[in-house]
Length: 362
Image 1 (cartoon, rainbow, N blue to C red):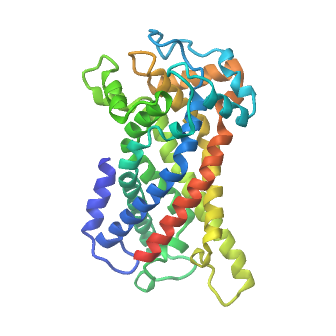
Image 2 (spheres, rainbow, N blue to C red):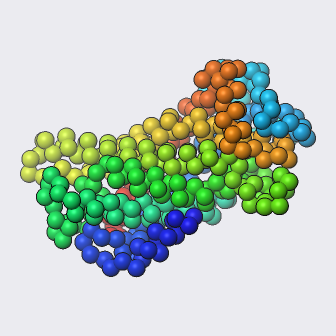
Image 3 (tube, one colour):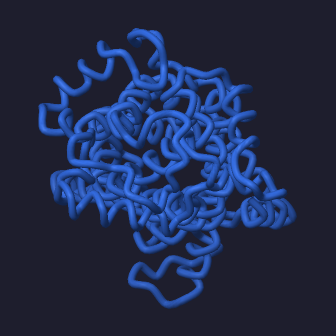
């Protein structure tokens, strides 16, 4: 949180020139990120709810149990659904009564928990993309100050050159920093959203339940259950996400450059469908990589509903080891097809919208 606002406040004081960052560029990043974030929530939330329900189905013990997260709470019988196909598992989750809620779920209930993300994701994504954009500009300036292969001078570069010609390692570093910084903001929202999706609670009730857990006087830490795992999902996942997106865009633009020697190879020349394909591929690759950590995170949030004690990151590691011992590595990928299917259209909406908005207002 502090890193995010430090970067925003620092960049706001800089004067705008060529490839440099300024208050205007930060504003552009905020607007573009806000618009892209809202689009992603509207498209992806139902499948996100289904993913969480598959991850947490038949987890833990009966309500009111005093079993601690570090003790054995998962048995192989909990994975009956996981041995079925993802389609059959999804149908079972939707049609069978939940063990923590009364009655069957409806398709409308898949939008449970959308309140928090709708109210906050725009702001969080705007900060995320603004930090990402600012760090990329800083790294690109350093890149230009050194002797490079193209011989580009800082004073001669165009304002958007950093978007197309910076090193891919700059993209990975900038997205890692932005994802890690905003993870302090996304952890409470993710936990509240997960509880709403599992129990179909209201936003207010999920917050009240989180505050009532644990014996510590500092109730704020309840919103950071298993934060180490959440940080890895956000930081490393974001880094792979943006790196893959930029890599695919540049690979396609280089092939187009071979066909048309008169144009300089630039991702700026890509069409919207091409950007959507690159974004969808990046989103699916990212979720394939971080899915085991995301599953453990959802399990920790689910277990926090069954005990007054607050699970820690180490509890998450022990839970992962237990799942692998009892049911093999496949148990860490339960429900992954749903997540990958969700990641494609969501990323195909978010990243092209961000690119388009940034190009339009810059």
